[in-house]
Image 1: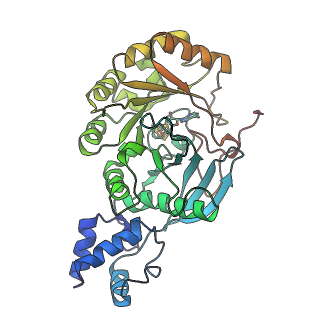
Image 2: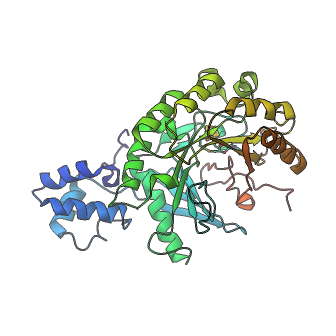
Length: 373
Ligand code: SAH
Ligand code: SF4
């Protein structure tokens, strides 16, 4: 993470060893580093002042060299389906979003767990990939989020959920999906550092089983993710052949479908798990039966699950959602070929919190979708 102009480094971005080195450098005992880590990542402290059992001189010394890039809540929207979308303001005035969804998640490990509470997390301000159907893609990339800012979305959400009386205090969130703004694998180092913080035993308490990273197809980083972490993989496929995917997702010209699928086949999928393939259905573009047949052929032999997402309307992008019948017919073609396919419900669509609708420009949320009951 490049330093932000005029700011001290973010204490929350430091892995435990680096925090230990800072604390040791200040002549403090090692247990103080653990105490500090727990304040930052277990209790989700927003400020150094909150850390009342740390000696004041230590806090002052820390503040001389570092600060906390704690996110400020700029807005909150609650959907009638229980989804909550937050817009956060970073220390340098950027806006990013996270979306809370009760009782969802890709958890084939725990199909009977009805008390999942999932946060959809952002990894970048905007996105450089520029997929034709995605609102975030229209923004371009403003900057990467740092590991501390990625992790802080979880801490701010947990604290706010407790305030709202949702979920079990002090940390209601059980699952994370890296499917918010940005391309996680385009910000690989900070993503990996954030996962290290969030999955640390002294931290926020997430299990790798409950964490999914979604990518549009950064092939080399898929291999790294598989080698260096144990989290689950989701891939935004969204097309059934290269000419179609080139048009919809420009990065396909660099990493075409065959390379993407080879990376998926090489990915170390843990026992009982599957790779999720997301497929946004665009009427008349990629929603024909023959597309479904090609998708089935692409994932054949993989432990795969296909998530079908009817296009969420982003006015001005020139796409339409298929009819519910078409979506069902597409799924039926996949199922006839023994491919597990689920139709994803549009969560939070009344507050523009659904997939591909996250975009904030100077505090203005994208237009609310209309025409839906
Ligand atoms: N950049 C990563 C993580 C973001 S996930 C990725 O693309 O995988 C965002 C998900 O929403 C992706 O699966 C994407 O295909 C989907 N999406 C984007 N725009 C959408 C839209 N308008 N309607 C429905 N889904 C959309
Ligand atoms: Fe970026 Fe993902 Fe949107 Fe594509 S779908 S523009 S990769 S956020």
